[in-house]
Amino acid sequence: MLINAGGMLKAIRMIQDAKKESGKTPKELIADLHPARPDFRGFQLAEVTLSLEADPSFDEIKDAGATVSTNSEAHTVLDDMFLISGAIPRTTSYENGAKYGVQYKASEDIWVKDELIMDERFVMCNLKDKGLIVFTGCGHAGVVNTSRHAVELAGHKLPLHAVVGGFHLGNSVIEDIQATVKDLKELDPKILLPGHCTGWRAKLEIEKQMPGRLVPCVVGTKFTF
Image (cartoon, rainbow, N blue to C red; front, side):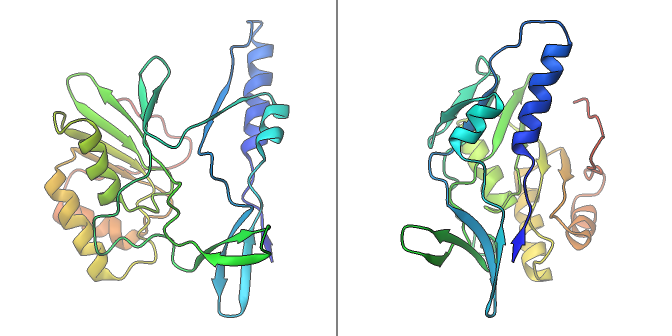
């Protein structure tokens, strides 16, 4: 069974078209990607494998109008405005990745377990006078592992101001949710904007343990920090 998770190529084309319509000379569009790319990702449910659509190849991304830059280590982009992490260390006992996650290896024609998704990364920036803003993506590494590593990459010199994106708690048991929010509270972020895969129970627990810090995060909303 194939699930369509696409959209990247269309997004690149829309960005390039918008630049052309503006009448300005289009600047180079960089697609910053991890060099390790599985042939397919999916989920193994009993005897059924649900396959996501293959990620666009590097050649397809180039053909759509972007320049591919591959990096596996932490590095900065856009004149050092943002930092993109490398592999996120897994230090907690309750953040275990994507349950039932698998990836397909075409060279061996097999599906293998891939719940940790170690090639996933996060993006962060330093907001002057406030501290770090961390964008988790889907957050399969766990919001605590991600936030801890962000603070570590900043040399433990900057406070954690905001965490934005997926907290990956939608299918977690209540004990893991409570442990997550407890450790997140110790990191003392001022604003939490949990996204799509966080789940209502986790949002309720955040509001219970950290009242006043939860901000709704939905598509189309503009935030000014």
